[in-house]
Amino acid sequence: MAVKKAGIYLRPVGRLVGGTGIDDGASDQLVLNGRAKIKFSGIELIERQGEWTGNRTFRMDEIFDGLVQSQISQNEAHAILHRVVGSRPDLAGLALDRTRIMGIVNATPDSFSDGGRFAGSEAAIEHALKLDEEGADILDIGGESTRPGATPVWEGEEADRIIPVIDAMADEGVALSVDTRNSFVMEKATKAGAHIINDVSALTHDPDSMEFAVSSGAPVILMHALGDPETMQDKPDYDHVLLDVYDY
Image 1 (cartoon, rainbow, N blue to C red):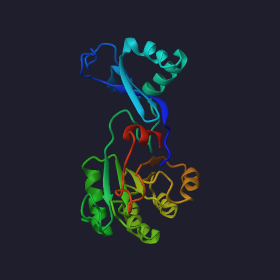
Image 2 (tube, rainbow, N blue to C red):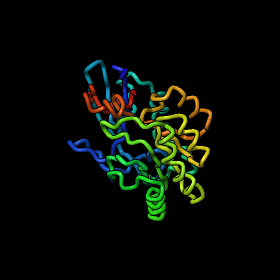
Image 3 (tube, rainbow, N blue to C red):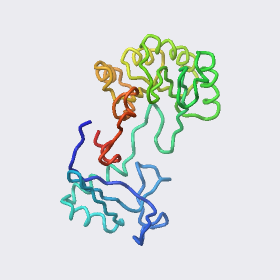
Image 4 (cartoon, helix red, strand yellow):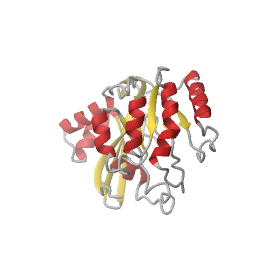
Protein backbone atom coordinates (compact mmCIF):
# COMPACT_ATOMS: atom_id res chain seq x y z
CA MET A 1 0.00 0.00 0.00
CA ALA A 2 1.48 3.35 -1.04
CA VAL A 3 1.05 6.07 1.55
CA LYS A 4 2.36 9.55 2.02
CA LYS A 5 5.36 9.83 4.31
CA ALA A 6 5.04 13.54 4.99
CA GLY A 7 2.12 15.74 5.80
CA ILE A 8 0.16 17.83 8.28
CA TYR A 9 -3.16 16.58 9.63
CA LEU A 10 -5.80 18.25 11.77
CA ARG A 11 -8.24 16.44 14.04
CA PRO A 12 -11.05 18.07 16.07
CA VAL A 13 -10.94 17.12 19.74
CA GLY A 14 -13.15 17.72 22.78
CA ARG A 15 -12.21 17.09 26.36
CA LEU A 16 -8.45 16.61 26.64
CA VAL A 17 -6.30 15.18 29.41
CA GLY A 18 -3.00 16.65 30.59
CA GLY A 19 -3.70 20.15 31.83
CA THR A 20 -4.46 21.71 28.46
CA GLY A 21 -7.53 23.47 29.79
CA ILE A 22 -9.67 22.17 26.92
CA ASP A 23 -12.94 20.50 27.86
CA ASP A 24 -16.43 19.91 26.51
CA GLY A 25 -17.81 22.74 28.62
CA ALA A 26 -15.61 25.39 27.10
CA SER A 27 -17.45 28.46 25.85
CA ASP A 28 -15.39 28.74 22.66
CA GLN A 29 -16.57 25.64 20.85
CA LEU A 30 -17.20 24.96 17.18
CA VAL A 31 -19.69 22.55 15.68
CA LEU A 32 -18.49 19.54 13.70
CA ASN A 33 -19.78 19.18 10.11
CA GLY A 34 -22.60 21.64 10.76
CA ARG A 35 -24.08 19.37 13.45
CA ALA A 36 -25.07 21.61 16.36
CA LYS A 37 -25.18 18.74 18.84
CA ILE A 38 -21.57 17.71 18.17
CA LYS A 39 -19.00 20.30 19.17
CA PHE A 40 -15.25 20.43 19.61
CA SER A 41 -13.14 22.80 21.65
CA GLY A 42 -9.65 22.17 20.32
CA ILE A 43 -7.56 20.95 17.39
CA GLU A 44 -4.94 18.22 17.41
CA LEU A 45 -2.18 18.95 14.92
CA ILE A 46 -0.36 15.81 13.73
CA GLU A 47 2.84 16.20 11.72
CA ARG A 48 4.56 13.43 9.79
CA GLN A 49 8.02 13.29 8.26
CA GLY A 50 9.07 9.84 7.08
CA GLU A 51 8.88 7.47 10.03
CA TRP A 52 8.55 10.33 12.54
CA THR A 53 5.21 11.64 13.78
CA GLY A 54 4.49 14.28 16.39
CA ASN A 55 1.37 15.92 17.68
CA ARG A 56 0.31 19.01 19.56
CA THR A 57 -3.09 20.18 20.74
CA PHE A 58 -4.36 23.74 20.66
CA ARG A 59 -7.25 25.55 22.30
CA MET A 60 -9.50 27.61 20.06
CA ASP A 61 -7.64 30.81 20.87
CA GLU A 62 -4.33 29.13 19.97
CA ILE A 63 -5.27 27.42 16.72
CA PHE A 64 -4.27 30.04 14.16
CA ASP A 65 -0.94 30.87 15.78
CA GLY A 66 -0.19 27.17 16.12
CA LEU A 67 -0.99 26.43 12.48
CA VAL A 68 1.08 29.34 11.20
CA GLN A 69 4.03 28.01 13.23
CA SER A 70 3.59 24.77 11.26
CA GLN A 71 3.90 26.54 7.91
CA ILE A 72 0.14 26.86 7.33
CA SER A 73 -1.01 30.34 6.33
CA GLN A 74 -3.93 32.15 7.95
CA ASN A 75 -5.98 31.72 4.77
CA GLU A 76 -5.23 27.99 4.65
CA ALA A 77 -6.09 27.66 8.34
CA HIS A 78 -9.46 29.34 7.83
CA ALA A 79 -10.15 27.11 4.80
CA ILE A 80 -9.30 23.97 6.78
CA LEU A 81 -11.58 24.95 9.67
CA HIS A 82 -14.37 25.79 7.21
CA ARG A 83 -14.19 22.23 5.85
CA VAL A 84 -14.36 20.88 9.41
CA VAL A 85 -17.37 22.93 10.52
CA GLY A 86 -19.23 23.15 7.20
CA SER A 87 -22.43 21.19 6.69
CA ARG A 88 -22.22 17.94 4.73
CA PRO A 89 -24.56 17.17 1.84
CA ASP A 90 -27.27 14.57 2.33
CA LEU A 91 -26.34 10.91 1.85
CA ALA A 92 -28.94 9.06 -0.21
CA GLY A 93 -31.59 11.49 1.04
CA LEU A 94 -30.45 11.32 4.67
CA ALA A 95 -29.42 14.58 6.30
CA LEU A 96 -26.14 14.14 8.18
CA ASP A 97 -27.20 16.43 11.02
CA ARG A 98 -27.19 13.50 13.46
CA THR A 99 -25.75 10.04 13.85
CA ARG A 100 -27.25 7.57 11.39
CA ILE A 101 -27.64 3.86 12.14
CA MET A 102 -26.74 1.23 9.54
CA GLY A 103 -28.28 -2.22 9.95
CA ILE A 104 -26.27 -5.13 8.54
CA VAL A 105 -27.94 -7.80 6.41
CA ASN A 106 -25.43 -10.52 5.51
CA ALA A 107 -27.13 -12.94 3.12
CA THR A 108 -24.17 -15.30 3.33
CA PRO A 109 -23.62 -18.72 4.91
CA ASP A 110 -20.19 -17.74 6.31
CA SER A 111 -20.62 -14.30 7.85
CA PHE A 112 -18.16 -13.53 10.65
CA SER A 113 -20.62 -11.20 12.44
CA ASP A 114 -23.73 -13.38 12.59
CA GLY A 115 -22.49 -16.87 11.73
CA GLY A 116 -24.64 -17.19 8.62
CA ARG A 117 -27.95 -16.95 10.50
CA PHE A 118 -29.56 -14.99 7.67
CA ALA A 119 -28.37 -17.00 4.68
CA GLY A 120 -31.26 -17.53 2.28
CA SER A 121 -33.64 -14.91 0.95
CA GLU A 122 -36.46 -15.52 3.42
CA ALA A 123 -34.29 -15.21 6.51
CA ALA A 124 -32.45 -12.19 5.12
CA ILE A 125 -35.67 -10.36 4.23
CA GLU A 126 -37.15 -11.11 7.66
CA HIS A 127 -33.99 -9.73 9.29
CA ALA A 128 -34.05 -6.62 7.07
CA LEU A 129 -37.68 -5.90 7.95
CA LYS A 130 -36.86 -6.29 11.65
CA LEU A 131 -33.92 -3.87 11.43
CA ASP A 132 -36.10 -1.36 9.59
CA GLU A 133 -38.80 -1.65 12.24
CA GLU A 134 -36.20 -1.12 14.98
CA GLY A 135 -35.11 2.19 13.45
CA ALA A 136 -32.20 1.54 11.10
CA ASP A 137 -31.66 4.48 8.73
CA ILE A 138 -29.67 2.40 6.22
CA LEU A 139 -29.66 -1.32 5.47
CA ASP A 140 -26.33 -2.66 4.19
CA ILE A 141 -27.02 -5.81 2.16
CA GLY A 142 -24.16 -8.12 1.23
CA GLY A 143 -23.82 -11.48 -0.50
CA GLU A 144 -20.10 -12.17 -0.16
CA SER A 145 -18.37 -12.63 3.18
CA THR A 146 -15.21 -10.55 3.60
CA ARG A 147 -14.18 -12.13 6.90
CA PRO A 148 -10.47 -12.94 7.26
CA GLY A 149 -9.66 -15.99 5.14
CA ALA A 150 -12.89 -15.86 3.12
CA THR A 151 -12.75 -17.11 -0.46
CA PRO A 152 -14.28 -15.09 -3.32
CA VAL A 153 -17.87 -15.75 -4.37
CA TRP A 154 -18.89 -15.95 -8.03
CA GLU A 155 -20.57 -12.64 -8.77
CA GLY A 156 -23.66 -14.32 -10.19
CA GLU A 157 -24.21 -16.20 -6.93
CA GLU A 158 -23.51 -13.04 -4.96
CA ALA A 159 -26.20 -11.19 -6.89
CA ASP A 160 -28.66 -14.05 -6.47
CA ARG A 161 -28.26 -13.82 -2.71
CA ILE A 162 -28.99 -10.11 -2.39
CA ILE A 163 -31.32 -9.03 -5.21
CA PRO A 164 -34.43 -10.65 -3.63
CA VAL A 165 -33.69 -8.75 -0.42
CA ILE A 166 -33.30 -5.45 -2.25
CA ASP A 167 -36.48 -6.12 -4.24
CA ALA A 168 -38.39 -6.79 -1.02
CA MET A 169 -37.10 -3.65 0.73
CA ALA A 170 -37.11 -1.21 -2.18
CA ASP A 171 -40.49 0.29 -1.26
CA GLU A 172 -40.07 0.26 2.53
CA GLY A 173 -38.71 3.82 2.73
CA VAL A 174 -35.29 2.90 4.13
CA ALA A 175 -31.99 3.68 2.39
CA LEU A 176 -30.38 0.56 0.93
CA SER A 177 -26.65 0.01 0.62
CA VAL A 178 -25.12 -2.78 -1.45
CA ASP A 179 -21.99 -4.28 0.10
CA THR A 180 -19.99 -5.56 -2.86
CA ARG A 181 -16.61 -5.43 -4.59
CA ASN A 182 -17.98 -6.29 -8.04
CA SER A 183 -19.32 -3.92 -10.67
CA PHE A 184 -21.72 -6.58 -11.99
CA VAL A 185 -23.36 -6.81 -8.56
CA MET A 186 -23.31 -3.02 -8.13
CA GLU A 187 -25.24 -2.62 -11.37
CA LYS A 188 -27.78 -5.34 -10.56
CA ALA A 189 -28.31 -3.93 -7.06
CA THR A 190 -28.73 -0.28 -8.02
CA LYS A 191 -31.18 -1.25 -10.77
CA ALA A 192 -33.15 -3.20 -8.15
CA GLY A 193 -33.31 -0.18 -5.85
CA ALA A 194 -30.06 0.11 -3.86
CA HIS A 195 -29.14 3.72 -3.16
CA ILE A 196 -25.54 3.44 -1.91
CA ILE A 197 -22.46 1.46 -3.00
CA ASN A 198 -20.31 0.16 -0.13
CA ASP A 199 -17.04 -1.38 -1.33
CA VAL A 200 -14.58 -2.89 1.15
CA SER A 201 -11.85 -2.65 -1.51
CA ALA A 202 -12.40 1.08 -2.14
CA LEU A 203 -13.21 0.35 -5.80
CA THR A 204 -9.85 -1.40 -6.40
CA HIS A 205 -10.96 -5.06 -6.64
CA ASP A 206 -12.86 -4.83 -9.92
CA PRO A 207 -11.27 -2.68 -12.66
CA ASP A 208 -14.75 -1.72 -13.89
CA SER A 209 -16.16 -0.66 -10.51
CA MET A 210 -14.84 2.91 -10.58
CA GLU A 211 -16.40 3.62 -13.97
CA PHE A 212 -19.71 2.10 -12.93
CA ALA A 213 -19.79 3.96 -9.62
CA VAL A 214 -19.28 7.26 -11.43
CA SER A 215 -21.92 6.51 -14.07
CA SER A 216 -24.46 5.40 -11.47
CA GLY A 217 -24.35 8.66 -9.53
CA ALA A 218 -24.80 6.70 -6.31
CA PRO A 219 -22.98 7.75 -3.13
CA VAL A 220 -19.99 5.50 -2.49
CA ILE A 221 -18.55 4.30 0.82
CA LEU A 222 -14.85 3.50 0.49
CA MET A 223 -13.56 0.92 2.98
CA HIS A 224 -9.96 -0.03 3.71
CA ALA A 225 -8.07 -3.29 4.20
CA LEU A 226 -4.51 -4.46 3.63
CA GLY A 227 -4.79 -7.05 0.86
CA ASP A 228 -8.02 -8.94 0.22
CA PRO A 229 -10.10 -11.12 2.58
CA GLU A 230 -7.96 -14.18 1.81
CA THR A 231 -4.70 -12.41 2.73
CA MET A 232 -5.50 -9.38 4.87
CA GLN A 233 -4.53 -11.09 8.12
CA ASP A 234 -1.16 -12.36 6.88
CA LYS A 235 0.78 -9.26 7.89
CA PRO A 236 -1.46 -6.24 8.55
CA ASP A 237 1.34 -3.85 9.53
CA TYR A 238 1.12 -0.06 9.48
CA ASP A 239 3.66 2.66 10.18
CA HIS A 240 0.86 4.74 11.74
CA VAL A 241 -2.55 3.15 11.30
CA LEU A 242 -4.55 6.39 11.62
CA LEU A 243 -2.50 8.30 9.07
CA ASP A 244 -1.89 5.35 6.73
CA VAL A 245 -5.62 4.66 6.40
CA TYR A 246 -6.36 8.37 5.98
CA ASP A 247 -3.72 8.70 3.25
CA TYR A 248 -5.00 5.59 1.49
